Structures are given as C-alpha cells and as structure tokens.
Amino acid sequence: MDIDERLIRALQQNGRASYRQLSQQLGVPRNVVSARLRTLLAQDRIRIVAAADPAFLGEHAIAHVAITGRGELTGVINQLSERIDVPLVSATSGMHDLVAEVRTSDTSALYGILAWIRSFEEVATINVLLYTDIVKGLFVSRYGGGSTVDEIDAELIELLRLDGRRSYRELAGDVRLSPTAVRNRVRRMLEAGILTVSAVITHTAQSGRVKVGMGLNLGAQTREVVEQLVGYPELEFAALSIGRFDLVATLNSGAPAELFSRLEDIKGLPGVDRMETWFHLTTFKEDYARSTSLPFAQSARR
Image 1 (cartoon, rainbow, N blue to C red):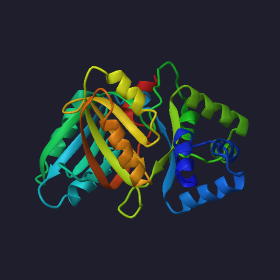
Image 2: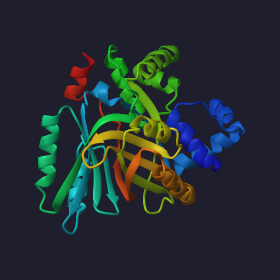
Image 3: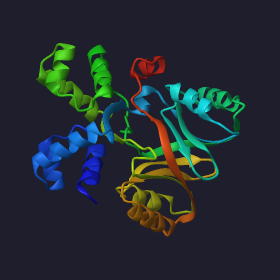
C-alpha cells in the first residue's frame, strides 16, 4: 500500500489527526505527510469534512436503494442529488443502474421517499435494503444519547462540515471564543459520538480507484463474518440489512489487484453463503455532512 493510500486510511479514521500524529502512525517524515496531504486536497482526490452521527440527527430509518431505469437517468440523478435526505448517489454496473442511500426519521418518511422515487417515468424498478445495524461507516460514531449541543456547538459543526481540518484558532475567531474553549467543545462532541471528522474519497471514472459494492447472504456465523470484514482496510462501509442481502458493504482501493484478491477472501469466509458485487462507476454525490438545524435533528438533541 503506497503512502497516499495509507494516508487516506489514516485520515478516514481521524480527519483531524495532526501532521505529527500522522507522521508517527505512517512512519514517514512530517514534511512528507504535509506535502502529500496538500496534494490530495488540491487535486480534489479527498475532502475532509465533519458530520454528525445519524442517531444524533434523528435518522432512524436508513436504506440502500438500487434503481433500474428506462433510458436516460440524468434527471433522476439530479433530483436525487438535490435531496438532503439522500447522501449518496452512484452509477453502478450490474443488475441496477443507480444506487442511492436514503436517511430519514422513520419508516413512514422512508416510504414517502421511495414512492417519490418510483414516480419517475425513467425508474423501472427499485430494490430496497433496510439497514438494521451499521457496523462500519465513515461518519457513524454510535451516539448513545445523553449529550446535547448549544448554538455555539451547532455553529462549530457547520464550520467543520465545510473544512474538517479548520484550525482551532480559525474556529475560535469564527465563534468568538478562545482556541482552548473551542478545542474542548470539539473534543467533547467527538468523544460523545455526536461528531466525526473523516476523509471522503472522490470517485469518478478518472480517479483511478476501484469502488465495489457487495451484498452477502450469511449463514449462522454472522458475527464472525462481521468481525472479519471490519478489520479489512479497504472496507469503507458495512451494514446488516433486511431484504435480498443480510449484509451490504462498500470497498474502496487504489490498488485493483489487492481489492479483487480481498473479494476472493471474503467469498471464501466460513458463513458467507453467497456474494453479489457491483462496481460504482461514478459517484455523483457523497455528502453525509447534514445540517444540524433540521427539525428532527433539533428534536433529537432535546
């Protein structure tokens, strides 16, 4: 795994890690880490942003929606991408033309969005997987409740949504507090699971990366399979689900040969009865940095 790939993985774990911390973790000089990170950001290969945990935002119904279309789907893609409750829209190979993720407050709201998607003439069919447990996700921190935010905390979240590595000094100037006070507030939200700062990888046909979706049907060894999967560095996302698959996941890598070898490993795991894969060809939207000013997010914080 090359330095850029290792750096991206480290930033996905902690988007606010200092250059010193990253240097120690990767075992390379600080100036190399600084130069490579600046290049990754300047080339728009990654974005480092903050997002609140789905449970904190009140997003209790989350689903994977696979869409098969009739002809041109540009209009559907644009409409989906404009919705704040649809953080992911991606063109895929295989049985379906598009994959979208829908996050909303409850199943009633989810059914409304699904009906809206079906209303497009260009949509032939949709297939829905309802997540029962997100076991790995870049912006899923398993908020357990009990913590609240005030207006200044909400403002800090909004600022970090735009730039997850914005310095404490800059944030302090924005909210008119001392850097120490801002650092304490941000750390409290991170430790409480309210907030996560991570790197989002840009994925287009020109990015040189391979992004693969995977659906698994599992036997009795579900727990063992999940434990094995979450240890793979290529795994960006995994969720247990209700529907045609017991688990749906996304793997992302700049090394295709290594990723294909990993898929073979997964296929051979005890407990994996069947595996289906699809390629993400172009990701049109991947934005989990949802505003904390939304009505159900406000009610979730009370």
